[in-house]
Length: 250
Image (cartoon, rainbow, N blue to C red; front, top):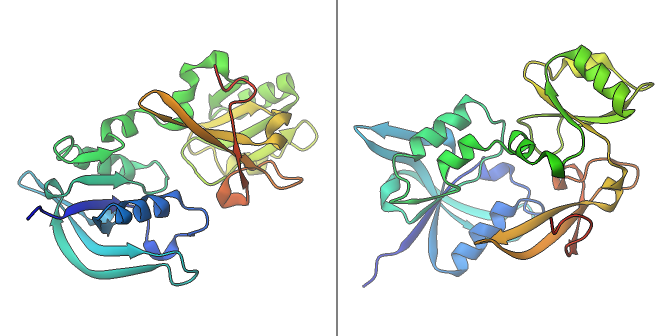
């Protein structure tokens, strides 16, 4: 008799997940269809003792029913080297708790497949990583210097600011010379922020391209609501199946 296949999902509290917008829910449902047993835990539930990484986890099953989308068991200690896959799916902030979790998960990867590789997760924060491709980016500034931000805004007329380590559209603002609000800016300057020239084509959506083993497999456009600049699903963005357009092929 073959052993049961197990996936441990490191994510936010399951009670807080919006089943309409959270892609992790779809991953879990696909894994269930493929016969995997699912366990849920949060980063705070990790323990490393004498070289063995465990998690205080709960068995989980998902079904798409509003306000009744999951069934979860009692907590139990699982050894992460005994599961087949760990999905690292908690939302930012990308803080020391997040970074510590990547160090701990290195203890079991690659014997247990951690997706994504915790070293790559730690070393490739998504907004800073994109600066390696300046020829594919609009004018971009990363700084805590408010005077540098003012000068960049004057140079580019209209800009978008966004926290480096946020998610879901939180902290994204659009400024021009007349609307610039230094009080809003101060809320986010505890860390450097990203400032970019505003691109009017956002009204046609931003796109997520799916690449598997180097091959393009599809893409989805996230369309902002009329009059909005945020296309994030958590901020009310509307999904629309699309193909490679504009400079996507590059």
